[in-house]
Length: 467
Image (tube, rainbow, N blue to C red):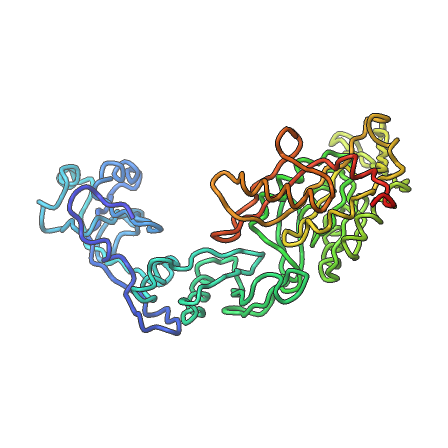
């Protein structure tokens, strides 16, 4: 709300009426009327000029259009419009008028007339309504944040707001037109099972969690109650996919419904994608087909530990090829009956024999999968530098750690954990390719990281019988 420098009535006059006892939403309760002055612009072509000249007098409220039809009872041209004026401006008190308003009235550019402004539930926003309902003691941290997953709003309400959960959900749904269902999480992700799903209760709308989400120009369909999805990882998905180059091969060990896999395949990256959750696997397959990237993706539903080694071994034997036929467009000047000529030659892409990247996106336990990389390319040393131009793969492993201002202590902890799992010293200092990326804050004392490092030759080529 914008206020002028002159004394004005309290902003509270435009707030909704208060009812701290409300437990069932009554939209009709939220209604207020205001008797204001309005400036009727006699020449509609001068509305913009009058609005600019009367900028100090016009009522300015968020979401309120100050240009209105002329109130009934005023004899003017039907095309005329009026400008709502601030409540301190009174028609019969010229001392409340600005000098600009006085001049325009005297010059008969505008005519002052009474106007009854009506505000109702549809005008006020979520925060306005909730401040009118919740107790004064609960006003400091009104729940405003939620994760939107398709048409579902996912709340994580604190205990003190549970008595008002249905009110909160209904108002939130009213004020967000794309939301049809509101749920509240009632346990931590992964507490119910290993697939990172969670128990929830429906607070408003139907119990329908079959959603469609768009990310990186891809469409993802899934049942949110049966798979893992985190809208807050959108930026991280984009960041990592941007690293992959067309023609590379990526092993997505915990692929979920495909937020890394599908966008990567769209840029002609070969992907072997896996998830242990059968529901995630079904959605992954559906999303691969929906986004038309099946030529570049092979989906699996197996244990991640074994998948790392099996997919690596299978890729070594792969001879997959994809033939891409360039799109041809018929010239507008060419008759449809005439055949097209000068077809560009099709492009043939061959899947590489080795992965350039492995993604391990299971932050709670992903580092425990690292021993699967020990000896993974033993006996295949000649596929890599210095025998060829191919480098050993980059490993992108997600994990949780504590929080600090500079993340230095966390970097040491993460490197120590990775080193222990691989049986080989991994240090960030002096390694230009080693990166520990701060993904996001999970809680006041918990942060999610992505540690990216190149698989050391000492690990990749280690003979298993030497362990």
